[in-house]
Length: 246
Image (cartoon, rainbow, N blue to C red; front, top):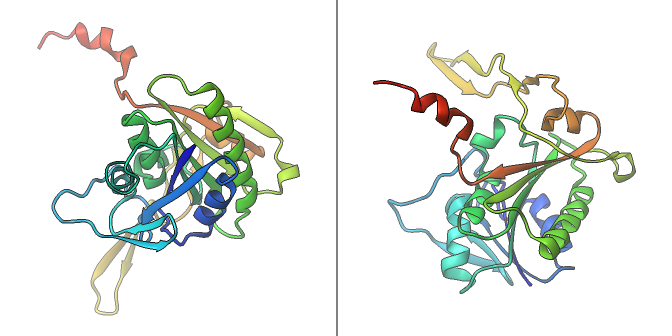
């Protein structure tokens, strides 16, 4: 079995290394990842300049592009064939709620699923003192199960693991996307010359306490598995919109 590993934290990320090393128990592992951190790159694809790739270790490639670039480079250039599975991560930090829109980690799995390859993203819900191995071990279980039974059509998974000891993880839950509470998302400062500047993402926002969401699961020491769909159509809105008379 051929497994492609990528991320948005860069090819030298400790989380990626833990994931790749653990996945070797399932088959032949290739890593194609950005040569630097590309967090919040979302589904960005580089079209207006050439991309360069360097093999930094056997079957480990660094590309000067986005996570979505890396998936395409791997499939159509480096691997000379399609992988059986794409795993993106382990992300340094959670990808919960609205993070899914911005996350390069999640977008890499999205791109693989869009191309018809089973895929999932895995993130560690922490900002420091990362416990990567527990997340890697769970990712291995998920990967083995997917290889046995597959995934629903046009579906990929977003997995978030609480940053606690493995024996403190209660279990896992199938969840839906939660909602953040956005406060002070943009921080305004003044530089030494008296000019204003801004930081987007001033700090960790809170979240709405809704049972069944990814936030609620992780906060209660459950691993969150959120099934996501390649088709972005809001089908429940179609009947209402069909009644419009413009």
